[in-house]
Amino acid sequence: MATAYDKLQPKHHDFIAKQKLFFVATAPLNEDGHVNLSPKGYDSFVILDDLTVAWLDLGGSGIETMAHLKENGRITIMFCAFEGAPLILRLYGQGEAVQADDPRFPDLLTFFPAFEAARSIVTVKLDRVQDSCGWAVPFMDFREERDQLKRTWDHRREKMGDELWPFVKGRNATSIDGLPGIE
Image 1 (tube, rainbow, N blue to C red):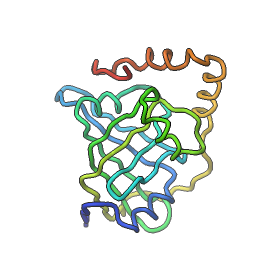
Image 2: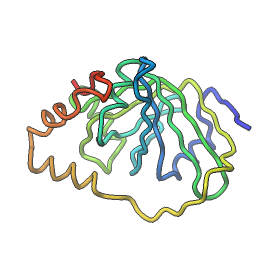
Image 3: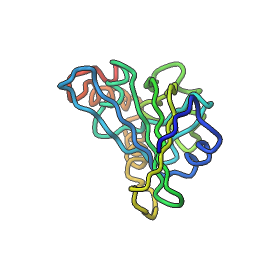
Image 4: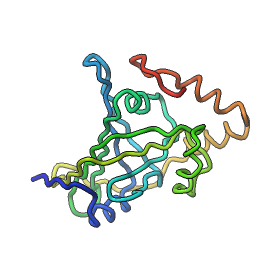
């Protein structure tokens, strides 16, 4: 049975801190547009307060999440227990992708001490928190993080220097549905 809350509870803080993986889902307003669901890893998620969370957007194969957030702000974040007691935690809210060239970005980056750079930091104002049983989620053992994305960013930053941000902007200008991405 699902239980809804108006903000994160202490038990949710503890649960989130133990998770190695979370998922984010967004969608465009156009009914023919593509719904996006992305897995996120690393130590890239923080709770700013009981109604605000953020994660470090290191980049990926597209710009769907940012494009959808720019268009309508709607987002759902999901955590699920792969170890221990079963639980699914969904965070619903309105998100914003704070790009690396935004004046707020450096202050937000301090919440992620293991990282020196990113494409954006997504902040989400929560309007609903919901947990449910998660009985159908399988047990899985965590082995290790993949380091390829971190290594790629480090290599590009070292190799490209000041040309990195224009490169990132060029590759992430529009979503698969033609919505604006990085500006």
